[in-house]
Length: 366
Image (cartoon, rainbow, N blue to C red; front, side, top):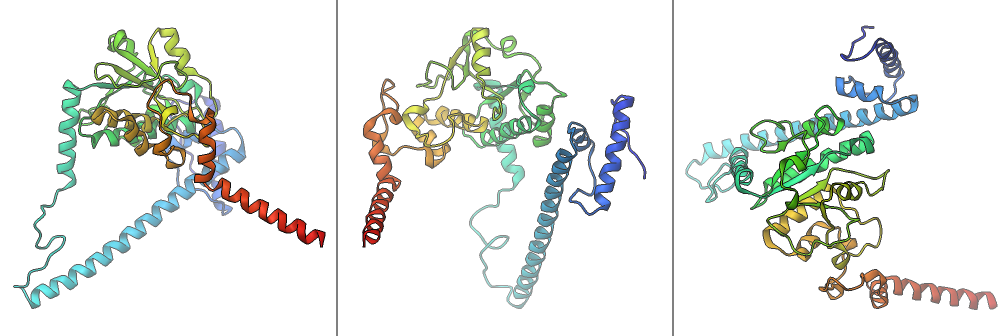
């Protein structure tokens, strides 16, 4: 068995790494669900797991991903074979009757074919204009110490999704990533999600500096659910900051404490007026917050943006919406409880239970 080495490890860590490689080979030979091979990044992830059960669980996760990729390749190969058969049939039909008019993809059509490169050029033009003249949107990545590896990866993937939505916007933001740790887990995952990050073609500014060193303090507004003020009106002159934090295991108000310490303005999104929180917390994902700001920047309608990006199970009906910012939240108002039960079947189920109970009591009495 040939052992590999990882740069930057001490002698003790190298010895442990050799033991883990032997363990991986034994699991593979025993028929366990392990991937065919591991990359350097994945081996470093293995080194962070101290228990054997955690490593086996991680191997199983990588094995399932590898099987999914192989199945996707097989599906694409089968689809390509089907397309080739259709093209051969089409070529035979064209050879038999070359003067016939045929409509469809790659045939006669009044619609021009727009390639992906053309769409990418159009998106880059808008992003370049936003970088020169547009409004910045800041992502604060100063929370790596408070997140697990999974949460850091989720943070990176949510920023990636926000970037994808921002590219398609009519009036995109200029994305600015501050307090970035270039060798941290969040930045490594973000580079895997956005391969051209840091290159001129990406048009996302990444900096290890704080936003206080890059922008005027009086223009900064930190978005936090724990803030006292509500962001009722979008201000194109302000620079909004989204905390790069996925706090599934650590629900402490870290962003609120940070912006208080720095003396920044802070605000929360107007969720209590428009959204019914029947289950779960009121924390939104990073890409949801970014998408809300992008849409509100475009048309200025909070209700329309929230209805689009918040799950429908959490939305109140139009008759329950309150336009006044001083109105008590719907879940504390007595008049909203009965319509909710009737709308979602709570009243109907209660009647059915009462009827079933009465029938059962009558049968028991007989």
